[in-house]
Length: 326
Ligand code: ASP
Image (cartoon, rainbow, N blue to C red; front, side, top):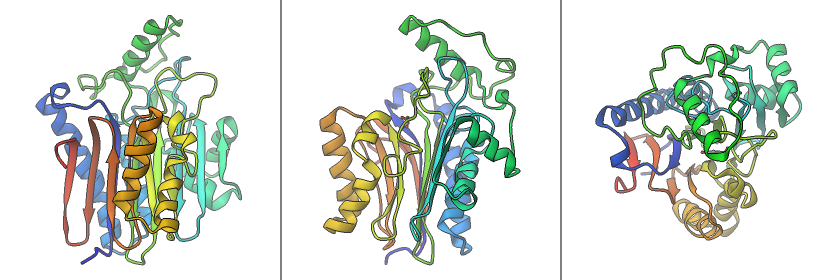
C-alpha cells in the first residue's frame, strides 16, 4: 500500500567510497542522517505539513558541521561563508529562495520567510541579510559558520589554483568536531529534503554553502527554483546536489517533475532519465531525491556515493551512503 506520508533526505553526493571513511566517520554521518530524517518523519506522522517537515530537517542539517550548509559551509575564495537556500510548496507552487547570505543562522527559514512574507521569490546578498534582520530571524556572527575543516579545504583549493590565501577569519580556530572527518576536499555536503504529508501535499527544500573557493558572487543550482529545488503536486518534489552549473542548464528538478506530470513517467524512471542519461551525457555529476503525491519515493545519482535516507508510513527508516546499498 502506498504510504500516506514519506520523507527523503540527502546530505550531498560525490566520490564517497568505503576506503574514504573510517568506521567512526561513517557512523557519524549515518547517525546524523538518521536523526534528521526521524525529526522530519515525526512532523509528518503527527499530521504536520510537508513544508514544516522539510524546514525542520534542513534546520538540523544546517546546524551540523558535517554538512556544507549553515555551520560547516564551504568558504568563498575571499574566506567568507555565503549561503544559498530554497524551499517550495507543491500545493500552491509558492517558493522562496536566498543566495549569498551571510547572517541568517538558518538560511532555509529565511527562504521560507521570503516565500511567506516578502511578496517575492528570491532575495540575494545584503538585501536578503537585511530582510532576515527585519523578520527577527535568528542571526549568527560569521564565525558561527566557520569550521577548520572547510578552511583547510579552501587553502588547499587556493594553493592548487595559484590564488592568494586570505587571512583566516577570527573564530575559525575554535574546536571543530568535524576536523578529523573525511571529504576534506570540501566538495560534498549540500543538504536537501523532500516530503509528502498526509494531506497529499509535497514540498522540497535545499540548503548549501555552494562550492569551495567560489568567486564573483557565484550561485549554484540549489537556490534556483526549477534547477536544484522544485515541488508541484501535479508532478513531484525534488532536491538536487552536484555540480550546480550543469543542474542549472538542465533545469534538473523541474524536468523531473515535468516528466512525471506531462509524460506520466514513474518517479524512479523520471529521476534516472535526467540524472543517468541527460546529466551524465553532459558531463555533470551529482544526484537527486524525489517524492510524489501518490507515495512514490526515488533517488538517483551518478557519483560513487550520496548521503541519503528515507522513511515512510509503514516503512522503516533507512540510511544509505554507498552505491551498493541499492
Ligand atoms: N549543487 C551545489 C552548488 O553547485 C553544490 C553541491 O551540491 O555539492 O552550489
